[in-house]
Image (tube, rainbow, N blue to C red; front, side, top):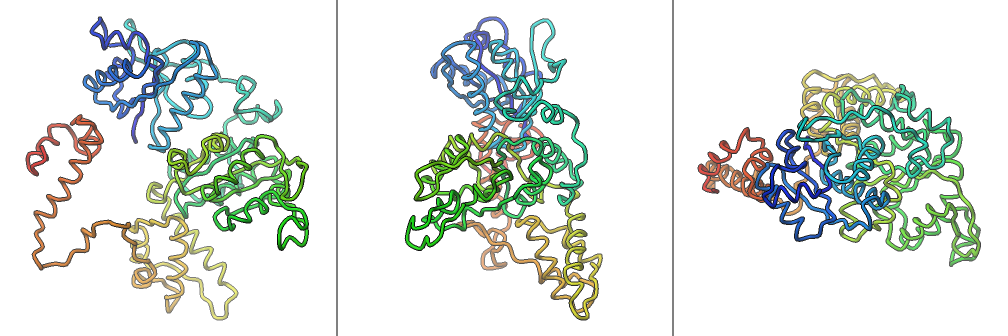
Amino acid sequence: MKRVLCAWVSHSDLAAADGEEGQGPIAAALAARPCDEVVLLSSHGEERTAAYAAWLGRCTDASPRTRIEPLSGPTEYREIHRAASTAVLDVLGRHPRAGLVFHLSAGTAAMAAVWIILAKTRFPAELIESSREHGVRTAEVPFELSAELLPELLRGPDAALARRSMEPPIEAPEFQALVHRSPVMRRLLERARRVALRSVPVLIEGESGTGKELLARALHHASPRHHKPFVVVNCGAIPESLVEAELFGHERGAFTGATAARLGHFREAHGGTLFLDEIGELPLGVQVKLLRALQEGEVVAVGATHPVPVDVRVIAATHRNLLQEVAAQRFRGDLFYRLAVAVLIMPPLRERPGDAGLLIDRALEQINRENAGDPGYQPHRLAPAARSLLLAHSWPGNVRELFNTLRRAALWSSGPTIGADDVREAILPAAAPAGADTILGRPLGEGLDLPELLAEVARHYLTRALKEGQGNKSRAAALLGLPSHQTLGNWLRRYGSS
C-alpha cells in the first residue's frame, strides 16, 4: 500500500530549500516517516513551488506532486477545505487504497484545522506534527469532532441520527449478503454502515462484477428509508434521447409516442433511494439537469412548466474512474463533487485474500437452491482438485464471473460431484487487452530466444519504473518490488538499461 503525505508548503519549508538552517517541516517529516509520494499544496506561486519541489525530490525518496492553490487569505477555511479535499480525492483516484498522512505543522493553523476535520470525517488519515524540540510524531487529537461541527457533511440529519452515526458500527443483517473475511472488505463495510444512517449522496466505484448493486441495496435496507422504494436505473441502457424523460418523467403528448404521462424514476423513488448504475454513461447534457435536481431537490418533467419537489437519496455507481473522466471532460466536475460526498470503493476479488473460498461455498449453496426443484437434480459438491483450480483463478470478472463459472460447471458435470475437468471447461479464456503483446502466447521453436524475451520484459519495466520515479532509484526499486537501489543498479547493469 502506498503512503502519501499531504502538506501545505510553509515559509519554513521554502527557507530550508534556500539554504537556511534546518530541513523545514515537510523534509523533516519525510526523513522520519518515509512516504512514496508527497502532495504539496502551495499558495506561493508556481516558480517558488517548483523550485521547492525539485529540492525536496533531491533530498528525499518521495515523489513530489505540486498543486498551486491561490488563497484570498490565510484563514479562508472554505478555500482551504476545497483545495485540500480536491487534492485528497486526486490521490485516491490514482491510488484508491493509499495510506494517507496529513501534516499539521506545515502551513497555518487554519490549514491544520481543516486537515483534522478531513481526517476525522471523509478521509481517514494519520495526523503528524514536527518540531525541533520533539521531532516528528503522530498527533493525538483528544476529542471526537461532533456532528454539529460538520454542516457540509452532515447537513440534514437530526441530532439523534447524528449521535447514532458516531457510535461504533454494529453488525447489520442488511450487509450479510456481502460475504467476506478479508480486512479490506471489513473496513469497507464498517464505513458503509456509518454512511447508511445518513441521507448524503454515495458514489460506489469498482470494477464490473464486484457487487456494487448488492452494496447499494444493503445501504438502502440499513437506512431510515428502508420502508420506501429502492429504484434501480441502468444509465448505460437508456437511449440518449429518452434519458431525461426516464429520469424526470414526461407529460402526455410531450413528444411522439408519449401517449400517457409518466412519473419518472426520481418521483417513483420519492422518500426512498434512487440507484443510478453506470452513471459515467450519462450524456453531458443530462448531467447538467441531474445536478440541478440534486441541488434543488426538485425535477421538471419533459413537457411540464413547473418543478415538482422530490425527496430521494441518490446512490451512484460506476466501473470508471470518474476523476479521470472529469479530467478528460467526459464527466462534469461539479456533478462528481456533488455525488462524491461519501465514496465507497469495491475492491476486486483478487485483492480480497480469503474471500474466494467463502464465495465459492455461497455460490454452490445458491446454485443447489436454485435448481432444487428440477426433475432428478442432485445437490452438487466440489472435488478437492476442482476447488483448487477455482481458488487459483485470478477472476478478472470478479464475483459475477465466479458465480457464472460455477453455474456452467454444474451444467457440465455428469454427476453430483463437480470435477477439475468440469471447472477447466467452465472457466472462460481471458481476453488479451487491445494492442497487448501476446508475450505468453508465442510459439515454441521458430527462433524463440527465452533469455532475450526475459531481457525484453526486464528492460520494459526498468524503463517504466525509472520514468515514473522521476529518476529516483530508491523510488524505482520500490515500484518494482526490489529491496534496494543497489539491487536495481545490478538489474540495470545486467540488462543494459543504466
